[in-house]
Image (cartoon, rainbow, N blue to C red; front, side, top):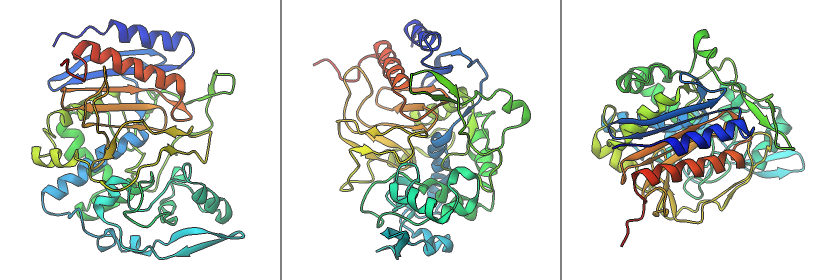
Length: 383
């Protein structure tokens, strides 16, 4: 389709010139490839970004390959593959400064890891876990120390949706079953087949030189260099947050999913993955921050939502925007993507700003998405 990206170019250039962002890039893809790309401010054509939680969908794709090969059962208990997972205790609360722990009510499954319903949490969105780390001195997953994954769980499996280190454990499942480090597995089975040439968990010196710096939003709205970053080295390839790549690389991944997994999955697997797998499990109306320098509070959209295997799902047509069934997610450094299989279009917007859900970036994201659908047709058909 002919695509006029002038409105998007103007939007990004204005965001950079007005100080809303220091660097930003946007990419629009359809089933045939990229329709539009623009970078502004400190970002350029070959800029490398920390994917952060945008790593999750790619790692989950690797796990889904093992499912379709019959090597991984979605409903297998995680502990049947990784015995150390079975040793995790559930943090009920505290008696004074003493953590109160018990065994989870039931075993968590691989499917629950993929849907964030396994009972695991994140220290920066869960006050109990934040307090536990403070009291015990245990490391967080952002330390690069693998033992950070052995922090207690916070819910019984299958009872609540809670964002957490689920995908990190899923990455360990992939490593156990494949006999490879996650980065090597993804390089062979996802990155190389899709032509994601700059994607890895360990960027080279040349790639690091292209990495956009992280900036922190200040109280007065300005940006200053951030003290927070991914660890320079990590004891494990963190499936939840540890990969790097260009926006073009991520666009190739989005394109594959627009094409029902073409190049990495069978259509039936991809179609199964983007169904809602958490019917009956409540999603929070607010993802409350326990560490404001990393994330703002994130309110839920006032529309039906669900979770597929590795993706958040919007379960309604949004007028002038995405369609029912669109898959999406984001990364903590204010990078976002969506995959609208009904319309055959996807978008990626990348910055490197903390804290997450920065309102100036979110406003730019909404403007970007609306500009895309003005080009490809509104999500809600005219009656």
